[in-house]
Image (tube, rainbow, N blue to C red; front, side, top):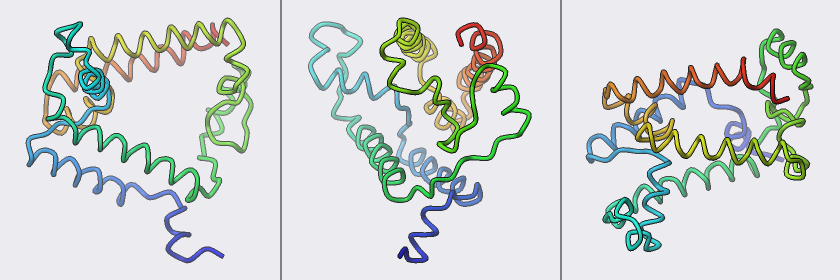
Length: 190
C-alpha cells in the first residue's frame, strides 16, 4: 500500500509547483555564473575522452564543466526513478480534435501515453524507413544544435532566462520547425 507521500509523488505536478522549481534552479545557476544546456555536455564528454587531440573544437577545460554532467546525470536518474517507481500510468489528456487529426495520419490512441506505438516501437529498427528517419533526424538534431549554438533546453530555459535575443530567435525557430515537420513532413513519411 502506498503512503500518501508516495501517492502525491506519483501524480503529475501542477505548473505552480514545477515552474517555481525550474525558476529556483535557474536563479541558482545565474547567481553562480553558470549556464545550462544538454547538447554542450556532448562537447564536454568528447573533451574528457581526449577528442581535443584531434580537433581544436574539443580542446576545452572539461573539468570546469563537470557540474553540468552531474546535472544531466541527475536528470536521467530522476526521469528513471519517476518512470520506474512513481508512474501512475496516466495518459495525458489531449484535445479530441488532436486525436482525430492523428488518426487521419494512421496513428491510433492507446493507453500507453502520447508516443504513437506505430512509430515508437522496436520494429522501426528493422525497416529502411525507420533507419532513414532515425539517421536523418539524428543528423538534423546534431547539426541544428551545433548551428544554433545550443539545444532546446539550453536556449529555451537558460538562454531566455538570461534574456538573450539569439535564444529567443532559436526558440521561435524550434517551434516553427516543429510545426512545419508536424504538418508538412510527417504526413508524407507515415
